[in-house]
Image (cartoon, rainbow over all chains, first blue to last red; front, side, top):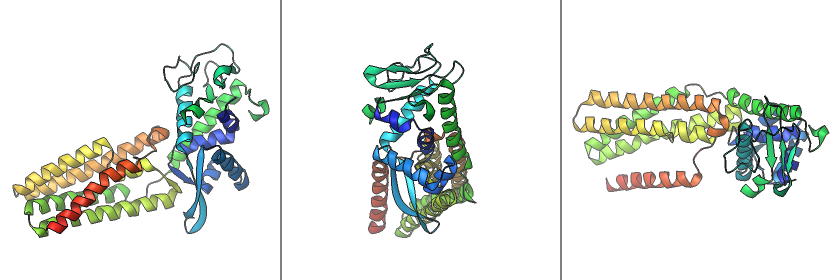
Length: 142
Length: 187
């Protein structure tokens, strides 16, 4: 399993990186409120993702007080974009070259279809729902 | 999902994705623009186009000074509104700065340059009412392109959130500033 899998398997981290795609930079408290988690939990997630190179954080000020600003790194943004593109094609076969092999194909199996040679784990939702694809291809893209 | 380790069930995966997408969309929809945002940008562009047209047509040092001075209100409005947006929302959206405020949007640029060209022509022809009309059209069109961008952003935040790269901004801004300095120096 690729690095990205480990880092984005936690729903809060997936949510955090997805939220960050909507902005260039966000203040810590805004992110915390959006995620509905405590300061310490968010700090931990940000630190983990920063160590993996998916997000950046910097100290700054907001409304006169010192705070932290968080943003996606170029690698994190590419990974998020790839993931959402592949997910968006969950109902049809993907033609996107950025999507790892097998993404977007409707697989009869409802649970994970691993593509070991690519280190990809696919999450397949039901026929009506979305499928998530989070794989080490992002590491290659980065 | 975490309870399932690396093998989330389809329902868990679907729920996590929907939740993440929903949180992103909510963040984008919660963003509010500072008061008088579009109006101030519209007025700044009107002043900028009008002063540029009159200044260029004047072809004197005072005219060039007027053209360059017309940039000041625009820069002030842009900086103040962007700072207010950041303070108000606790976020920075590069796309808003580059496409709405600084006219990086293709439609906004087209409207701006068409209005500016027409205003300069009208100023050389000494049709001052037409200069004013072109400046107003340019300002209104510029602001409307901003409204349209904001609507697109809220529809697909991930696709529109990013601004131009710093390198591109430097490539665009440096020649403009150098030209302004040379014009003032020459005059």
